Length: 415
Image (cartoon, rainbow, N blue to C red):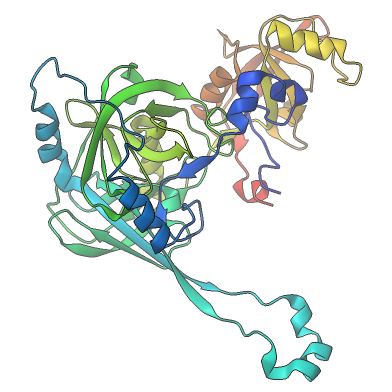
């Protein structure tokens, strides 16, 4: 079963105490749409067909979709034009396709069916599924950042530049946990983007998106940074290890993998998802995260994510009261703050270090923690095989444990 293995970067999402919290219940019900448009190419493309895409495109002519109202510029009124002229040539369209073999139910292989129905039985057939997304060139020698779901399972990847040139792309690597992939094309002296610093973003800053929504190449939209640090659980993607940037710049299917830019034309994020049926709710992977992952993909073709193997939940007075008043919870909490360990996965690094369900994490490497996000960040920024010092409260006593993060077992998580 998917997500059977949780780690320190994934807060508990199945606890009834978590689900009883109104805003978290609402977040869990959000329908996330990854923005690779086209057919159902594996990995998260928005399901649809050409007719649906045409209908969606036609609606854009009569209604505002996911759009932010224009805002006056306090500086150069033409700054968006300059950003587009600067960055536009480095934004590409990525077309992916894969061949899918249709499956025949096992019952049809029974000799009884073969004898009496013969040629009337369905035959195995192949079909080609296609999808379209966006990407941006990060080096003049043809390295391109995009979303993992844009190229997941693809047999062929075609990269088209703004000037009309097309190249066959090779996927150097992809990481499903952060939805980051690197594609390489054989070319030199290509236009490339300048990367910004997503750690310094503030809500209210300008945000400019460039991409290929619904087959409308080289589309530009503007808005602001609506929020930073949106957790994967908040936006309905608990299987991701990303703290997303939220923007109201209009992004739609096909924008996946395209850049989110600041007013200086620096890439601050990679557009990846929207909330279905909502307006002005788009999400981007911070460029600092995408850059860190891409460096590993370029050098080794894969990414190792540190993990502890715990399900956790930030304590609040209400959660404490709910747990202590429920005789079936099996947990008695004496702490008002900290991060509650709800479950420890068997044979995980946390289990081997002696962490138990019901422990309350008070500090990590000497830094106080009050929410699951701070533990997530600390684990993600650690090293596989390194050391993390946890200070816990257990049954009224303070306990110090050393935990060595392991490599996140992605294959096991997909069982």
